[in-house]
Image (tube, rainbow, N blue to C red; front, side, top):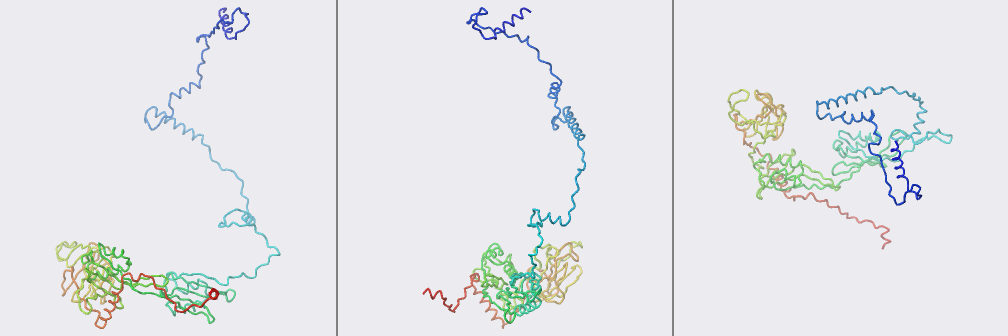
Length: 533
């Protein structure tokens, strides 16, 4: 114990600052020695508690492992148990749902609801008000009558299936004005010829009496391509006033090279779609569009064309269709007659052989002319025609002009039509789904006489096409009919004159602008011009 005290005293003396006083019998220059207890002499650290032990165990054991790895192992099963336990705990501690008690809404009377609405902020489309409704004071006097506009201008459009009287009634005209306007318009142009979409500019005046319909002041519309018509009220009542529109009817001529496709070449040249279709139908009756036309040939078409002074354009029917090869005319067709048929200029006044047309739009031959094994009967026999495969309901055309000698049910042919043409030639059309002509009627080449079907002995929709001469069947491929001249000597000169007039039209001449009309009358000198002199 004495040794321990001496060591403690020495350590305290060493830690204390040096003193100048020599009370301890030591010089100032002597060294100071520091003494520290050994490690063994320090107090030992306390043992870990329960919390530290739990934290250490959790650090060593993975309670929430990745369940996507080591499936089936002990670690994976431990993680699964943890997930199930936490889920069960969450379900147990899940709070319940109960209704929330609230005060009942206050019932509103209509007056209170109107008061709230007048002070609310809401879009006008939802019925909001711009301010409070105030009661009228003695200073407010009611209006005896509401003033009306002296005139009312509006535009009405004639719709499809609509009539002029109904349009005028909707515009607000009275019965007397409607009847008078209808009568005046009918004297100039039939009401049925006014096209749908025509706009009527209507001006209504004052009412002749309180509650009566307004009186018509004026009405204007486009009656025809070359005429504007207006109905105006004057001192003597309503009158019709015509306003002619200058129209140029120079035909439109389009020429070009056939190239790889006649249709595409004509479209690139600016030909209207309807004119191209009419041209192809007309040429197809005389030339094969597949074999008779070459890439270097020139096509020539002329269509009726109108231009008005107001800038409108109107394309009409095909007037001329021609084909040239090497600078020489190969085919010239011109529209002639009231029925609008195309006639060849080279065959005027003499009979000619014309190749028959195509009975259906499809050129797919499923069975040619000759012997074959019948698909239903099962034995070989003569197939006295050509079968064209076509969709059900496709139109069937007459290959040439003729008379219907038979139309009805005909054994294995099913629904059948037979035509008798000139030169002793006849054609037959079988397996139709529906017949469109009657026996004894006259048909034109290209006219629809029926529709493709599968009646009779047939395995599918197709057309059975036959040809007869002298009562016996012949191969329909490549046959022609003799067409007699339909223009006699009296019309021949007029036909040639019309053809020369059309051929004299320059290509694209109809596309220019109409020359303005020069007024010869001198205008009166204005007073301002006199002062300027």
